[in-house]
Figure (cartoon, helix red, strand yellow):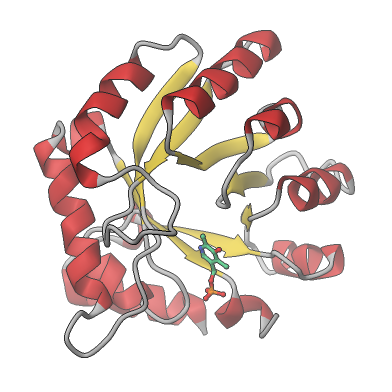
Length: 216
Ligand SMILES: *Cc1c(COP(=O)(O)O)cnc(C)c1O
């Protein structure tokens, strides 16, 4: 049970359960699964695809559901996603940030974003490179209607030599070097296989799909 795993991991890390938000990743599961999880008390849901996020959010007007965009966001999808997303975890370029900010301004509210960082420096992966982070943060912070709340990462597949904890610690230390928890309160990291390691390293948001909804 995911909740038990989170509680145990927080205890082990000497952290309070209230410091960690569980985002239930409902991608490729039907809306009925979202409703079931909602009835079980979950309120934060994550989707990878703009269309799926838009469709599912339109199926209900549950006022206290918070939708998280956790997949790569194309600029031409910002019009649909920005009005409904509680948080966009995948801001990784200035151009995307500008598109998010433009639509947030049009909606008359601020958009909360996390900057996705490619901590493993993988060639094909989304996210800004660690050495680009300082400049990107500065540029994003200059945009109105856009608030940078923290950092997010999807680490490389873990191996014995390079366990996930190493990448989570890398993200936490990037945060420390770019203003710390005051400037960047949220660290979105950790999935079904590695949420314990993420919480140990300071995750404030874990994104869990399989352990809640089963295999996709
Ligand atoms: C699918 C996905 C998750 C959830 O992964 P599980 O292994 O099913 O827990 C978390 N974050 C991102 C970015 C994802 O794409």
